[in-house]
Amino acid sequence: MKSRLLLLLLITAQLSFGQEDLFGLIDARDSSENRLSDDLLPERMLFTQKILWGEKGLMRKTGIAPLSREQRVKELQWRKSMLTVHQAIGYLTLAGMIAQGVIGGELYNGNYDLKDTHETLGNVVTASYFTGAALSLFSPPPLISARKEGISGARAHKWLATVHLSAMIATQYYKERDKSLHRAAAYTAVGAFATATLVLRLD
Image 1: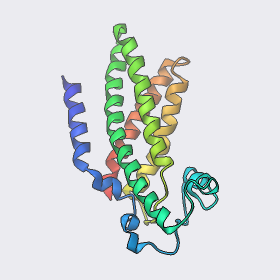
Image 2 (image 1 turned 180 degrees about the horizontal axis):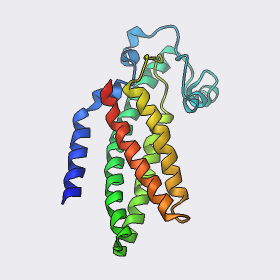
Image 3 (image 1 turned 90 degrees about the vertical axis):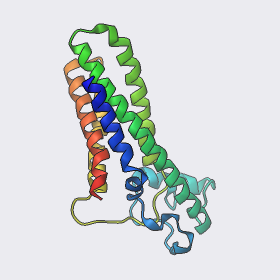
Image 4 (image 1 turned 60 degrees about the vertical axis):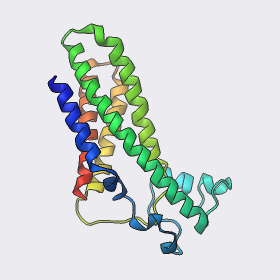
């Protein structure tokens, strides 16, 4: 009962943040065509964005998305849609992670009837996690790269993403190799992922 109440409170708190926090990561000029500058791409991009959306990226070379003012307006709209889905999947993934933690605890206490449920839910959580990550990593870049001094919610979110991504990979790697390390990696992933969703409130 306590675990269900905790899950409900966490989800409710996250949903109350709304889309405003997510779009705080996107420059306010992203959705305004009449503010587009002559510089169509930001100075800094993620590597995953650059290989797709950079001046010489795959989307440009193949002609699927030629670099132009009109195309960039479309891309900024795509970006917002992709990050909205990324956020929604993040909430579902967090809920699944918490459920996995509860079920995993029962397994470690000897309730092996939940083994199949734990494995099935684990596969679902893994799929949703990496789907959400891909939507963020491969979304079109913003118009400009805003840089803030000191620690911000967006910056902490990115740092924590490195932690929970590494922990998720370790969780999968040690799943059949070392149960103790698997468990430690899983709890690290959950903690870092939950914190990453909360720190956006700093902005």
